[in-house]
Amino acid sequence: MGTLKDAEAGAAISWAKVIDNSRCIGCHACSVACKSENEVPLSVNRTFVKYVDVGIFPEVARNFQVTRCNQCANPPCVTACPTAAMFQRPDGIVDFDKSVCIGCKACIAACPYDAIFINPEDHSAEKCNFCAHRIDVGLEPACVVVCPTEAIAIGNLNDPTSRVAQFVNRGRVQVRRPEKDTQPKLFYVDGHEATLDPLAARQPEGGQYMWSQQVDALPHPTRASSPGNSSAAAIVSYDVGHHAPWDWRVSLYTWTKSIATGAYLVPLLLVLTGVLKPEAVLWHWSAPVVAGAFLAVTGVVLIADLAHPERFYLIMVRPHWRSWLTRGAFIITGFGAVLAVHVLLGLLGVGQAQLWLAILGAPLGILTAIYTAYLFAQAKARDLWQNPLLPAHLLVQALLAGASVYLLASSQPLGDALTPLAWILAGAAVAHLAFVASEASIPHPTAHARLAAREMTVGRFRSYYWTSVALVAVAAGLAALAQLVGDLCIPAGALALLGLLAYEHAYVQAGQVVPLA
Image 1 (spheres, helix red, strand yellow):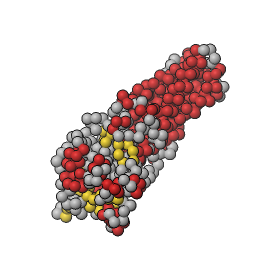
Image 2 (tube, rainbow, N blue to C red):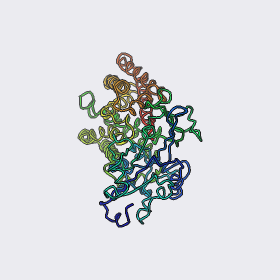
Image 3 (cartoon, rainbow, N blue to C red):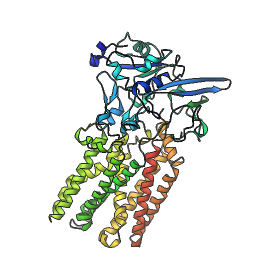
Image 4 (spheres, rainbow, N blue to C red):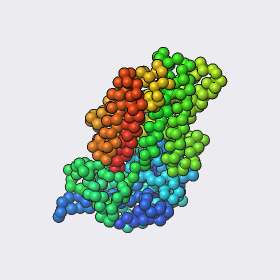
C-alpha cells in the first residue's frame, strides 16, 4: 500500500481498491470489521457481502460480491450534495462531514451503487470512506487487515508498482455500472455478471433469503415478470435491505411547487395576452397570494423531508453551487421575494409596477417549475428520471395546476378569465397526457429505465398511474365543456389537481424501485 509519505504527496496519489473474487469466501469478516472500526449501527452497512447462487443442481456455484462505496473519480454524490458534506479529498478518497449534512438524501439518490445511507443514530449521510482516518496515519483500512484470504487490496493507482495498479493494468478487472461515467475505483477480479449486475439474478419469491426475510425492502420489479436480466440460472440468496431515499414528501413537493408556479404564471399569461387587465384581481392579488401560500407549503414539505431539518439554513450559508438542490433553493427564494414585492406594490397602490416586476417573476417562476428536472437528472442512479423532456413536462404541469387551482373558485370572481382558464386547463391536460403516454410507450435506453416505467404502469404503482390518467382525462373533458356549463369548473379543477398528485407519486416512487446493488 502507499505510505504516509505518499499520502502527503496530495494529487500524486489516487487510492483504489481491488477485490479478488477468486479468493473471497463470503465470511463477512470485512463487514464486521467495518462496523467495529467505524461504529456503524445495526440495520445499516458501509460494506456488505451479497451471495448469488448460479446454476442448476447439481451444477451450482455460489458467487460473492463485496459491495461498498466505489470511490469514484467523478463522484455524483459530491456533485449533488448541497452543502459539500460529501467531498473528494486530494488523494481521491470520497469522504463526508457529518457536521454539515442536512440529511436531504440527494447523495443517496445520486449514487448508482446504493452505497450511502442515513445513519439512524445521528441522522447524517454515511458510507465507506476508505477508513480515511487509518490511511492518514499510514494504516490499511480495517477490512483489508482482517480479510483472512487477502481478497481485498488497496494501493495507489498512479504507482505502477503497487499491487492494485498491477491488477488493473495487467489483469482482467471489472467495475460496476461503467456506463454511468463515474470512473469507479473499486475493481473486481473474477467478478460474476450475476453479482455485478443487480438485475442479472432473480430475487427469491416472497423476499425469503438464506437467513432472513426482507419484508420492508423494495420489491424487485423483475420478480413477477422475468427471471432477471441474464440467461444464467441465478438467484440472490443473501442480501441486505434496500430502501428508496425519497418518500411521499418529495412527491407532494413536486405537486405543491407546480401549483405555486402555475398560480403566478397563468394569470401573467392572461395579462400578457390581453385577456386580463393589469388591475384585475386575479393578477393584482390572487397570483402573489395563492402562489406565495403554496410556495410556503413547498418550503415546509422540503424542510420536513430533511433528516436534519434544523440545519436547512446551511444550504444558504455554505452553498455548493454544482448541486441543483442548492440552485433550486436560491431560485425558490428569489421567486418568493418577487411574490412578496408584488403584494407590497399592491398595498402601496402602484399596481402598474407589478407588471414590470414580472420581468423578474416570469423567469424565476419558470425556473422554479422546471429546476426539479435537473435535480432529478443529478440522481444518476435513477434512469427513469434521465428524461430530456422532463423540464417541458414540469412546465406543462405548472400551467395545468395553476389553471386548476383558480377554477376551484366559483365562477363569479373569475369573470372574463373563466373561459380562458378552462381552455388552459384542457390544453395543458392534453399535453400532460401526451408526456405521460410517452413514458409508457417509447423505448427506454436502459433496462433500469424500462423496468421503472413498467413498475409505474403495470407494477406496484399502477393504481396511482392509471387513476391519474383517468382523472386528468375527465378533467380535460369537463374543462372543454365549462364554457357551456360553468358549474363544471370546480370538478374539472379538483380532478386535474388530484390526477396530477397521483401521477407525481407514481413517477417519483417508481423511479426508485429498481435495485442498484
